Image (tube, rainbow over all chains, first blue to last red; front, side, top):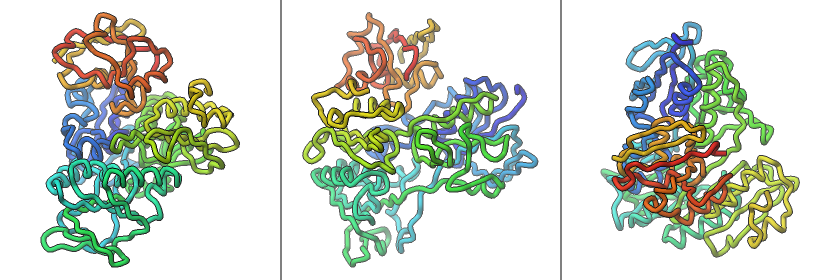
Amino acid sequence: MAEQTCIIIGASHAAAQLATSLRQEGWLGDIHIVGDEAYLPYHRPPLSKEFLAGKKTEEEILIRQAPIYEKHNIRFSVGFRVTSIDRANKTVVLDNGEILTYDKLALTLGSRVRKVPIAGSDLPGVFYLRTIDDINQIKSYIGEGKNAVIVGGGYIGLETASVLNQLGMNVTVLEMMPRVLQRVTTPELSAFYTRIHTEEGVKIITDSTVNALEGDHQVERVIGSDGSQFNADLVIIGAGILPNTELAESAGLEVNNGIVVDELARTSDKNIVAAGDCTLHPNPIYGRDIRLESVQNAVDQAKTAAATLCGKEKPYHALPWFWSDQYDLKLQIAGLSQGFDEVVIRGDIQSSREFAVFYLKDNAVIAVDAVNKPQEFMFGKKLITNKIKVDKSKLADESISIKELV
Amino acid sequence: MALIKYIEHNGTKHEINVANGTSVMQGAVDNMIDGIVAECGGCCSCATCHCYVDESWVAKTGEATKTESNMLDCVDERQANSRLSCQIIVSDELDGLVVHLPESQY
């Protein structure tokens, strides 16, 4: 194992963890990370939060500083894209023509933004939001009193709306579905976030599709399909992401809404593992294969992948969890709520900014959405993983500490 | 720049120079110190960067905020000197700070 080379393709959350874990698990050979962004791995969540708001610098959002990687002999080729994998010869080809040889390969390819075919989306001032470069360009269009239109009312859209609103812009969110956050949460949470954003001065318009973006030298207007018009100095499109599976598919690996891996992060090739956004993997808690778009998944699955590469077995069975920061709201989500048959609300969701929504199936909690209720989130995780049958009236009763129900 | 001393549960000591403005958590993560996990990257959302501030340093590091304290209530063995290390920001004042790490962050 001392002479072996591990190449990691992709240089974000999963890659940073995988490389670190490889050293911790005893990998002595070369570790070479290739990423197509010109940055060392950095935290992506701050891009729609503190980094957009100008509260953190590029250096402050790096996952680890450069000297740490040097100290642990982890090499980077940043700003290079891998164009193909030759599994028979165990090589990868970069876009500069360079050919690298691997003994083991880790695919941490992540996701890319889903592009929406809107006329005028190539006008200056129109952006997708996924990278440091995106934010740096967006910043030059931010200004107090200017108009921002955000196309898409998912987490990215709403987080961005809250930041731009707080920076003094007039913000409008256009959501195609009947409610914001439709893909990821319940009507109760959608209504809550609509209320808060509205209270903060953001206009939220649902059932709204965009026909075109117009402007002379940069975007000036957004035209809705119903003919409505919105002035816009800045347009940000947040229409979701797609897993980067093409490289794996071209190489003949099994792909199905993600690179297919098992609980040890192994792909259909014994020398190749995959981790993070790009994978479809089995989740033992919910008994189905899933693809997750989260930091937790990237980090935890990367640890499993690294262990596998070092000949150890650390099956991946962590409970999915997520968070979103908007205004003074800390939303923490534990578990996946699909398939719930009952909802228990703890706290006042109608008029306060603190509550938790528990999703139950067969009287056991399968997921929780907690807003400014960190304990409900933390203990909710235990309720879920231990499949505890709860007394629903106690769950809804704030005078009973959630700690007691676990 | 301040010298931060991390003492693992098994007694292993690490003395790390951490830049001012960086969190005690980041200093640990940057140096791959076992015992600090920091799943959420430092935004007070996961309680896996729990540490015990050495008694002699409790006054200088200050108290947990309300959100931090709520998160700390969820850790296995909260003590009076428990803090989330992502919320302790290094400054010259904390030169020599000693923190003890729990056996596990889970």
